[in-house]
Length: 601
Image (cartoon, rainbow, N blue to C red):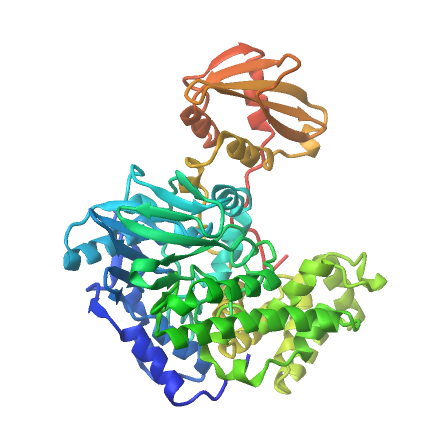
C-alpha cells in the first residue's frame, strides 16, 4: 500500500520508453458508438498532468500518467501499437498483403478507431489475420470492429471454453464486481477514478467475439500468416487459463501477452477468476528467457509500453520471474509453519531489488491479495480453525456482533475512535458490521463511506482504490441504474454445448425438482443432435445420444437457439412430441441480477 523511493534512471526509462516511437495521437481522444454515446474518453485524464494530490498514492498516480499516453507508436520496423484507446493495447504487424491484428481491445468501436488511426499513417492495409493472445475480453471483444472473420484467427488451445466461462457462465457476477474492479462508474479525477494500473479504464462499447479458426497447441509451433513467421510458447494457467507468448524471428520482437507487464499482476483478480498458478507463471517466464529473450531487440505486451535492448529485456523478464517465484515459495514456506493467508500477507517481505523495480509494484495486483490467492490455491477457503468452519453469513453475523458491542450507535462511536487513531482497516470492519446489521442507519453508512474513501486514496493498487471508492459511492447514492453486459456479443461464437451449459446454470434447482423430461435438439446447420435431460433439478447435455427416446424433438439451427436463449420465442423451430416442454424449460430459468448488492445486505 505504501510507495517506494525510486529515483533517477529507472523513472526516466519508463517515461522515455512510453513516449518512444510516437507517430500520431487520436484527436480528440473520444470514441463514440453509432448512437453518439461516448464509449471511451482518454481526454478525461488530462488532470494527471498535475502534481500528485493527497487523494492519490504517488505510485499509482505515476503509473496512471504513463498509461494515459495514447496514440499510434512504432515498436520496431513493421510492428506498431495503438495504446491508450482502451484498457489494453492493439498491436499491428505488417505482412505481405495486409496487417495482422493482435488483441483487438474490448469494444468494436475502440478497435475500429485504433485501426483507422493506424491506417491514417500507414495506408489502407486490409486485416489479413487476427491473434488472440488469451481468453480475457480486453483481448478479443473488439474483433468485430476490425474483421468479419474471413481471415486466419489464431488463439491458444482452450481459448473459447475459457472465454465462455468468464463472460457467459459467470458473466453477470464478474461484470458486477468488474464495475468495482475498474471503477467504471466513478468520475475520473483526483478524488475519483485515476486508472486501473494495467491501463486507464475499460471501454463501454459493443463486445464481439469471432471464434478462432486456427488453434495453437504446443510450444515451438510455428505459423506463417500473410508472410509473417510466428513462433509460439504455450503458457496455460498463468495470467489466463488459455494464454500464449509469441516471437517474431524476422523482427527480433517478443510479445509477452499479459504475462510480463509493468506491474505486479493478479494471481486472483478482485472481480473474480480461477486462481492462477504462480509457480507455473515463473517457470514460463524463465522458459521465455531461454527461448526468446537472448535473440530479442524489443519486448512488447498487451498492456503498457515496450522494453528495448536485449540486456534490459533479460533483466525485465528475470525480475518478473523472480517476483512470482518468490511470492509462491515464501507463501508456502510460511504456510508450512502454520500461518494462514491473512497472516502471511502481513508478514511477507519482498526482496530489496524487487522493491526498487517500478515494474514489480502492485498497481494492479497486490502482494497482499496475491499471497491470499496462493494460499487459496493450495489450501482452499478454510484456514483449518474449527471456529471458522461454520460461521454465520455476513448479515446474520453482523447483527450478533452489533448486539455484543452494545448496538449500532456504540459501534459507530468505537469505529470513529479507531479512525481517529489512524486504524482505518478496523474502522471499516466495525462499520461494515453496522451497515449489514442495519443498512438504513445513515450515520453508519456515511462513516463507512468516509473510511472507504480514506483507504482508497491511500491505495497503490488501482483496483483496490476503485473497489473502495465505488463502495463509498454506493453507500452514499445507491447502486447504478444500469449494469455492464459482457455475454451478449460473445454468445454467437460459442458452441451449442457451451450455449446449453449457459442455459443450465440458470435453472432454478428447487423449482425444477419434480420435473423430468428429455429433449433432443437437431441442428440442421451443424448436422448434429444434442440431448438435454432435466432431472432432480439438474440439466445435463449429451451430444449424439445412442440410447432411449426423447419426450420432444426440436429441429432448428443455431441462430434459432440463440434467439430462444435471448427470450425471443420458438419461431422457425419444428416440434415432434410434447411441444409444451420448451416453454416449461424456459419457465424454470432464473434471470441473473446484474446489480446485486455488495456493500449492503
